[in-house]
Length: 357
Image (cartoon, rainbow, N blue to C red; front, side, top):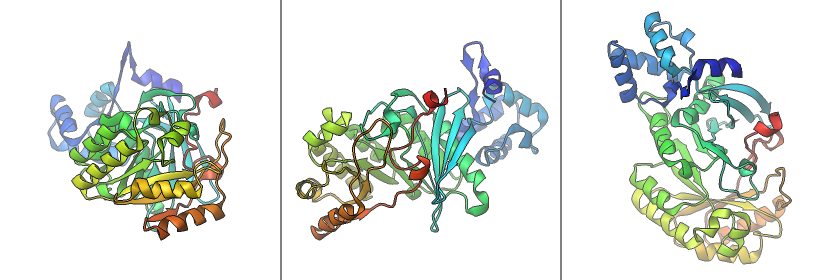
């Protein structure tokens, strides 16, 4: 399949563009440039959202399909493999039309299924507990490549409710791929899209203050999650490279500005590492740092990954930690982990190119 895809997209040095990257205005311009009536754009958009191949565009003239085929790939990615967890989560390994491997996870819930998507091939942030960045960053994914993970999985699970919620917590750092992340949010929530509302979208960041503030000003009103993982700069620098550049106080200041602009409570993601950030002293430091911020704290016992010797906090200590936070007036829960036995849980997604080779 990979060889076929490359023969389809390669024209000298030029790679064919993706239909999934186009919003309705851009798609309408393409349709008009082909000499076709504007209403064809809505027909084509329905096929894009359904993740159809060109062979399924039965309401579009064949001559027009051939013109589209010359310049645009109908699908941004194809499935290579999948791994199914005992809890029903499904980790998908996709290959893009450019030959990169990325992962996404389907998470079934009785209140509505969700999808965890990747926004980059690899990651450049280098957090020591996360598998995504072990091989570094290869490139950003386009908005259409991010969207196509959702569209593919929604099609796969249409019979059991489709997809109701999307979290950008897979491989990569969304705010480090800002423009494509922002366009993805607009494609996902468009009236012509898959009918997922902004409030059902979560963006995770390890902490880029100016981009956090910009996100609010650019109209994002979903959930913003900060990967904090340590309440002091000294500790955070030991596990997160980005802490060398931005202090925890800078991050909290940016989060407060985000809340002031959007009135949306932020989520603090906090991976619990045994003997490192799960002490009573850490609880006091969290209270000192986050007091006054409208937030909810998600406590996540560390999930095992290759190349990381850190140990997870026990479930018993996780709940003790949580109870002490709530007794201090903070909102906190221990998050249920899904997909860990299929390497699809928080921190476990990665670019598996090297393993494949």
